[in-house]
Amino acid sequence: MKDVISQTPGPLLQALRAEPPLVQCITNYVAMNIAANVLLAAGASPAMVSDAEEAGEFARIAGALTCNIGTLSAPFLAGMRAAIEGAQDAGRPWVLDPVACQATALRRRAAADLAALNPAIIRGNASEILSLAGEASNGQGVDGRDPVAVAEAGARRLAELSGAVVAVTGEVDFVTDGARAVRIAGGSPWMPLNTALGCSLTCLCGAYAAVAGDPFDAAVGALAHYAVAGTRAHQAADGPGSFGVHFLDALHAVTPEALDAGAKIALVAAVPA
Ligand SMILES: Nc1ncnc2c1ncn2[C@@H]1O[C@H](COP(=O)(O)OP(=O)(O)OP(=O)(O)O)[C@@H](O)[C@H]1O
Ligand SMILES: Cc1ncsc1CCO
Ligand SMILES: [Mg+2]
Image (cartoon, rainbow, N blue to C red):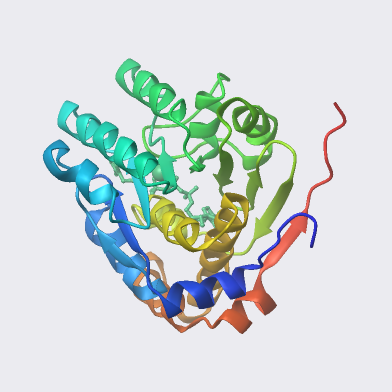
């Protein structure tokens, strides 16, 4: 594992809580409140700042930026472009969430254009990653309808083409930078029944990217934090509603030591060229 990740999730969580990073989240209307609570519970400092007039200026003072096309419109896109330019001027990482990018021409174009602007991490469900990688997708709107395993080859290719770490989420997550790859198990079947938990995970990837030296470690850290908290919350909850409450509690309660002890991260062998 040492040659694949240089920083395990635990020390990254410790760093995040020691100095909570300011994370600029340009996300959709559904996710805004949920993602802000997820970041606060985990230990980071969210700010939902998206208007083009200030988004670039704000990105220059944030530790990381996340862009999500869930409720896409021209003003959101203009804000994302301004913020990405600001983040890149300041040398800060940014994370892309290509919500429902298989669904319409506008989303396909926006996701492809944004993916070409050097995101550090692209995080999506398998249906979104398949589409962004140019493959057939069975996604239904924002809901993934493809198994993660089917998107693994596309994720590797997308990582090579974009230079981003690609994180595909589902029952078992897959993370790759094109060369390295891991699978992360855990979580709960109630997670996809809680809207915007994926969008919020994208924001958490931004928080981890702000404190990690390597975006691969950051994506693994954020996904492992979610998986461990999701497993815990499942044990305490009775269904999707109470799961949401227990999940915020678990994101907050998990310690760096418990995170490293509970994370189920498995190395995936390199695919021969
Ligand atoms: N069946 C499952 N079992 C365990 N964990 C799951 C399952 N499905 C999804 N997850 C977890 O839920 C989290 C969100 O992933 P998901 O793929 O549902 O995102 P998404 O489709 O982008 O969500 P949204 O668009 O609603 O925000 C991830 O941490 C993932 O591991
Ligand atoms: C339900 C929904 N619609 C647009 S974005 C979003 C949140 C989950 O992606
Ligand atoms: Mg999503």
